[in-house]
Amino acid sequence: MLIIVEGANAPTTPEAETILHERGVLIVPDILANAGGVTASYFEWVQNIQHFKWDEEKVNQELDKKMSRAYRSVYEEAVSQKIDMRTAASVLAIRRVGKVALARIQLKDELPF
Image (cartoon, rainbow, N blue to C red; front, side, top):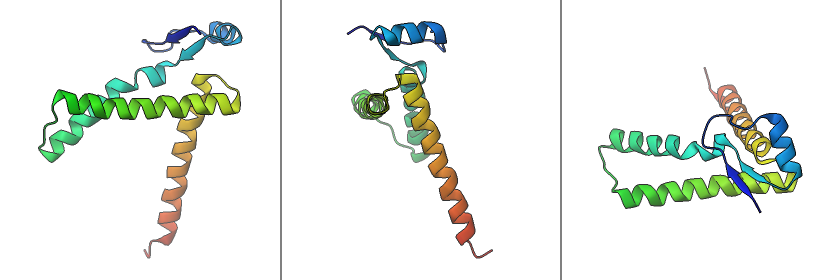
C-alpha cells in the first residue's frame, strides 16, 4: 500500500485526493500529520505552568502515545465509515467539539445562577 503523509498545509487538491483514494493510496492528512508539533507545544506549556521539565525520552514517549492514538482513531473512523482519512479526521473533530458544546450547555443549565 502506498501512503502519503502530508507535511504541509493542504498540499493535495480535492481532485487529486479523490483520484488517489480511488487508487487505494492512503493519505495521512495534514491535520493529523502536523498535530505532533502542536502536541509537543502543549507538553511544553503544561511543563511550564507546573514548573516541571520532562526529558527528551519522556516527551517522545508521550508524543508517541498521543499520535498513535490519534492515528488509530482516524483510521478506524475512515474504515468503519468507508471515508477518506481527511474526512474521518474532520468527523472526529466535529464530534468532539459537539460533545464539549453540549456538555457546556448542560452545565450552564445546572448552575443555580
